[in-house]
Image (cartoon, rainbow, N blue to C red; front, side, top):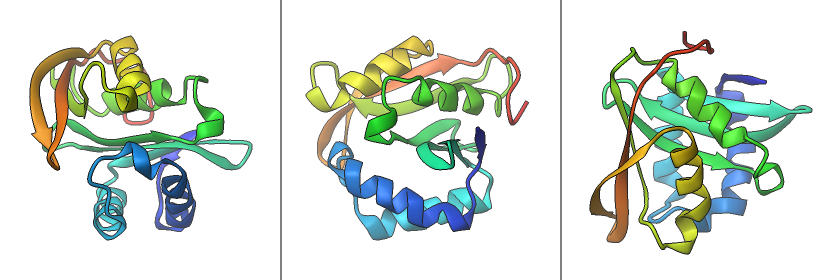
Amino acid sequence: MIRYAAKEDVPQVLSMMELVKEDFAGYIEKEFLEALYGAIDRKEALLEEEHGRLAGMISFSYQEKEITFLAVMPEFRRRGVGKRLIEQVTECFEDGETLQVITFREGDPKGIAARRCYHSCGFSDAEELEVFDYPCQRMVLSVKKGTGICG
């Protein structure tokens, strides 16, 4: 089940981050928490639960039209969790709007799964850049609406 994240979900999200934080360049818990609480307040954070357990979480910005965070618990990977969360986010935007995400560059072992997921959702590669002194790449998607939590 996908739903909006709530403040009471923060402990579960932090537990997930302890398992996956090495996959996030520049991760600082205090800054992540500030961004998470802001996303929750703005209804810009969704999570998926399976059997009452956190499977994954995504946050995004309506203003920037950007996915700002996506993580899936290790035991739920390769089960479509990331793809379902991305599809839900696309429902929060209008047809034809461009949604962006910054992720790892091609060839970076940390980005293999993320890039595969984004490409499978229709994202295409855009410019290369550096974030937190780490080589990254912007990916973009022209939104096509279906039916989802925001739609």
